[in-house]
Amino acid sequence: MGYIHKVDLEPVALPGENIVILPDNKPFRVAWIEPLPAIDKDFGSLAAGAETGDTEVTDVYTDENQLVQFRIIPLDDVEVTVKQPRAKGRWVTKVVQAKLIKDNPHDNLAEMFQFEDRGLFFNVKNPTSYTLPASRVRLVGFRFVLEPLSEMPEKKTYVVVGGNE
Image 1 (cartoon, one colour):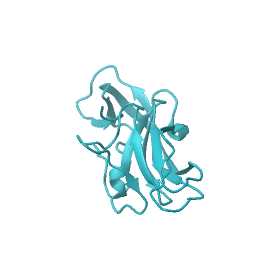
Image 2: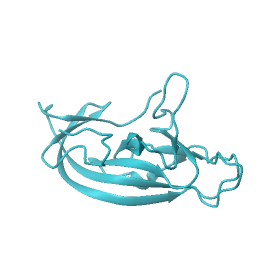
Image 3: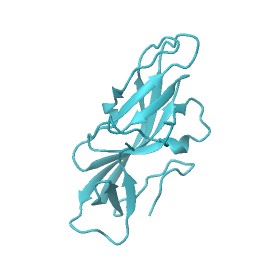
């Protein structure tokens, strides 16, 4: 069984292996996997210090019983915070929400999952003292087609979809 946050991007599970979606605790078997080499999303021009506010990112939404495993890679000099769904921040502690930045040497830590079309929101901020003509973010990963299981399998990989309050 797999796990996420490896240095090299690898599918969390292979066809025939089992995934349990948390917090729903729903078991699935992976039917097949398709790579998603690059989905580029441009949040537009941002003035110095400006931000987009919570912007829904539908680019990785899928149909029923599908899952996307992806990494978020800022391409421009922006800071990205993530909510999944809108009311739940990702990568939060008691006092701070971590942000993604360009050229992060630990981009493997920016790996997450999107199940079906549940809400995913990015806030993209320009932390510089100049206007950015573009504020692009790249999403790369895998799309999984899943088969629901009626019983919890003995061998499984847990996948967390959603953030903290």
